[in-house]
Length: 192
Image 1 (cartoon, rainbow, N blue to C red):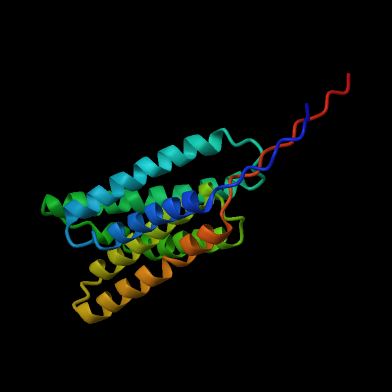
Image 2: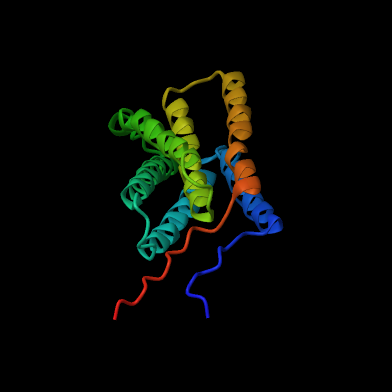
């Protein structure tokens, strides 16, 4: 019996299914920015995804850059917290822009830094999920930034939405053609 673990591969159909699921999540989140209630639903889905990804990362002992992925997930949680606070207060008729307006541009930058990080890593299932939650966080933070500025230029916002929708397809397409399972640690030979 060989002690070499055979390389695990994702079939093309599996990669398409995963990429489509994440792309639908991205687009649904992008166009669900019309009301505070939709924003709360997007934030709760993001929060559930972060919890599930964090549980999975906890069991992946071989990841060298686990702290980077945890930092990306913390940025996503920051955006979710800001989004839930603003949406909840707006539903209640209160305004909290005075306390969050300086944090949001930083959150935009950090969320999209997480997106760029994903392009430099092997496109695995976990990286596709990290990409998806960080891209959604970046989109939500941009939407919060524009709504905080009381931007009335809906044409510019619609153009930005279309650009975000197109850009969001790049990584899922890369994953469809190059995606794979996360690498498996080779068993350590017994020296006894």
